[in-house]
Image 1 (cartoon, rainbow, N blue to C red):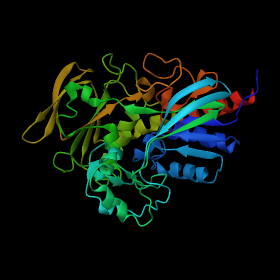
Image 2 (tube, one colour):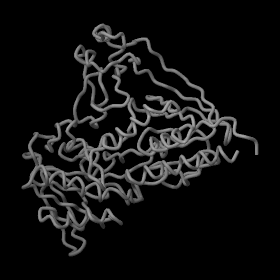
Image 3 (tube, rainbow, N blue to C red):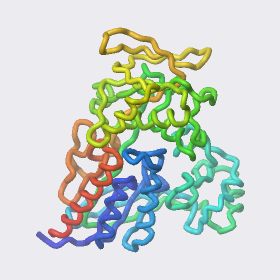
Image 4 (tube, helix red, strand yellow):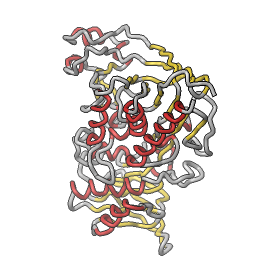
Length: 420
């Protein structure tokens, strides 16, 4: 074989698997480029309140990783960026990256003056549109990079000049244009992660129709101190604390009409979120409606803890339909108890749908031919010689596993270059 043209590595995706892969490769001595479509690094983990098994806030781990990035001159990253094309071969890839304008340059000190001058508001993407944020905004309090973003709608508005003039550091550039960066790299790691399954497709469960039906990712933001309710778990319809909350498992998962596979972490996520409810609302009662509970190895302790709580009821049965009592905004769940074969109508103040993990590659494929399984996951860690899949691009996994998977992909990428 010919020698590798370059020893550099491209990592696509700035979530936990991508960060882990990129940092490990950079610390092993390789030039690393990280591409992330959001204006910040950290992926969906940054949006969590806590993650298992440690039940600690995500910035316990993310802050350490960001410090490692700052201290490593071999690490370069692009936010608000996507890979548009890939050509070449193992050891000699040509990659084209499109970077959308942030309209804020590196002079930004996150002083918030632009937001103070801005009156336009947009749906807050970090909080899954459960609240509003200024159109000149920091993505979240602990964002990395700590730099503001201007929404394109603001830039096109008559208010843009006023916002620009409010910046004392000349950090706002209203004329910023999309850029294209061309890179030559020796290996590629694809770690674009997942997105929650679109719950509006579940017509029978009322999401998008009834305000008190939310998804599991929205529940994380409701419990987070920097979320739309400052960490208070409240019903969206009236802002009241719910006393009866249902967690509906396999909402669209293990269903041939939606996601036919098990996302592996949904049971654990609901049990974790039930602890949020019980700690914050001691008198509240939780029902977890399930087909079967999947909590393996060390994570079974979370199940045992939840089972001991008298105010957490595990109900074996699939929810067939959710309807709303229009007078109270309470929700009526029609469900069959599969143990006894009896039908029930159970009223809840609020419902959390445990929607599954859909790989982003199911809709945004890698721009070079690779094999996928029937669900859109890349079918193997080694997608093709010199290109490796990591984390939820490859299979549904939790945070702990995705870090290990990212590290494995980094090792494969380094070996790929070394053997050439």
